[in-house]
Image (cartoon, rainbow, N blue to C red; front, side, top):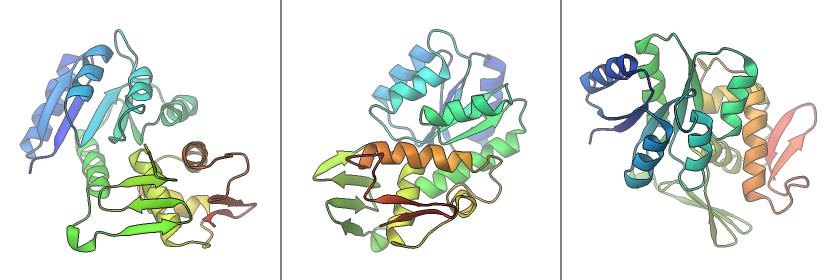
Length: 226
């Protein structure tokens, strides 16, 4: 089945080029040119991944990302013409899974999108499994998390982090190792990405994020699932 991609950018030539290239690879591509249009499309159609520009009319990419995270964990890759670290971290703060800096190589864009889609696609049914720990339950096929019976809306990366840690309970992972295992060895970001996602994850699954009982910090070493 063709993967469904939403490309959001107000520069129509960029959108046209990305769309053509992705369709050549057999993907189904929708396009939006402002933040409000993009948000409406995301509410009314399911996508495998969203390529979202930061600078958009009506609603910025950050605002779109933040609102989408209220109802969906669809992977989001931000496009930004700025290279400052704060812009990258800001995108991740709002729930983005990755970012690409303009000008970009379309081959890099396709490779990053495919890698994220591959990692976030549901696992085959024969490997489907549920993991339970205390009042937490992970549906690894459906990529859903429940705490005390309530479903928690996680982003793709937040789920991958939690799944890795819970499958290897009590094993301490350094931030560098988590970055490599979850984001891939070719990911250009730094370990602050891990810290941001761990903090967001705790805010969602922990009753007291400042005093976590699930995802624990091993000071000077890294993180582990208790």
